[in-house]
Image (cartoon, rainbow over all chains, first blue to last red):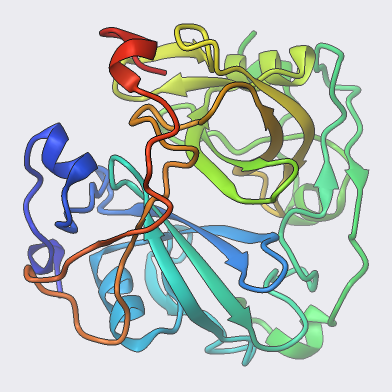
Length: 154
Length: 154
């Protein structure tokens, strides 16, 4: 499965108002994927999909991604068991970002052991400099990544 | 304001478990930003921030982005009036994605006139091909983009 699986990009009107799926893969062949918890609506993670990951996710109803650091197709949960069943997929206006709502198997989505990857807040209202300190929020570990992953992460 | 505004990237442990903000800007100098509605939690849009957009958002508490298509810094709402007041900013484990929760001024965030950019669903459960049809969901227009933007969009 390649980008040829999907339709070619048409006019802006076609892309934004049409019913044709014509994703805009970037120079690296990727679209951005935002993954939310189907029940709570919370954002669990942001990752990327190449054409094959997108096609496999659509076909299987389970989340597949493409790891930019490992340059590899990646079935979420393949090493941890923390698979994601997709209850709904949306695509945005210009079709370069995908939103999936998932039922997350296991205690968390983040390879650090948290439920969500977004466990630190950036304080607002002051020009940032190198003294800025992140604030941990909902950062308690839901699982021990060393036990779940060993050396491999997903 | 440049990437020098922020701390240098340390070890994986520093980046994931530390309180230092050290964003991972990509080859184009950007991080991904997911913007959700502070009240409903719904994902409104996905956009990008360069170092200056990120710094301005942190300092002002209003959303600034970097438009990849226009290659320009962009204050959300500068032409539409649909500014976004940021109630909380989070950063993810590897610090290449930001989540902002916003109070959206005006009827919607999407330049097509919708409340959210994610107004079309991708049907699941079948291998995608060029006959796949997107399904419009919550796609009613909240405002008329021609009236709000004229020629310029944000």
